Image 1 (cartoon, one colour):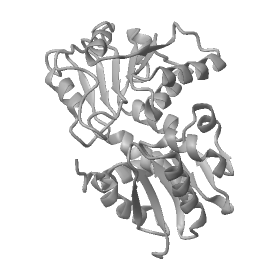
Image 2 (image 1 turned 135 degrees about the vertical axis):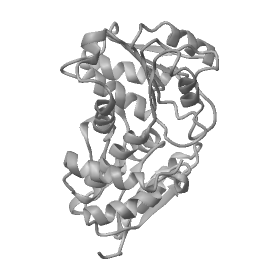
Image 3 (image 1 turned 90 degrees about the vertical axis):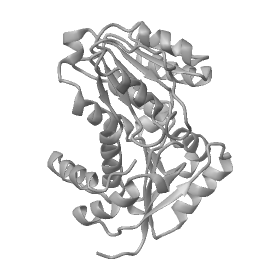
Length: 309
């Protein structure tokens, strides 16, 4: 295997991610042209010029195969979209880029999250769950991952939830999300938007859900910065599912859920499978690799051997 070139990883604290150990293993399995993954730690308060400089660097460096973008998906789009030759329809609709590839010398941005989050959801949720339970979904956070999950749920042709509620502290983010679904003709009794001012307010939303509902932490709290979108006093829906999108960090939200796992009969899921699908889909995009379910399970098994966080 040639060791010329590298793939990029744009995040906040990239060296702490399991992917730094996982990528070389996957490179062997998938016979990629490089085992080198280079992290680009970008602060949460980065300027638009910072994003443009980064994308320009990726575009102009012939040894750079492409990159995965985590926390900065929306900000990178807003700052650097004109630098791309092509952006996929979801990326344009939701103004985010999670995968950067360079096929045939073009710079291509894609938003892979609706696929990856859908795969991760199907890994743990029974196929006819919503139809049987009439359960709702509460997505805490309207950033890239939260938007992607809402998109995946809105486009389910079978077994759609009775209602999806998305929260955010930023009214502007919710307005942007509302505009996306208004353009799709999605009624607000199916997709609703709530501006949140406090964790106590979020607690009330969680406690108002019907039994069996799914609560998702898509805020980044507990990973990129410590904290939780709910308080210690939150009460999760009986027989519900609680999904923490993070798999590493302080993970306060995950602790809240696990503390109630037995008493509320909860199914609690961390972000590990989302991590597996997220990375494997982008790597396949960057290196033009075809993934099958069997290959994904092989990748997952190898990743488990070096899992950290």
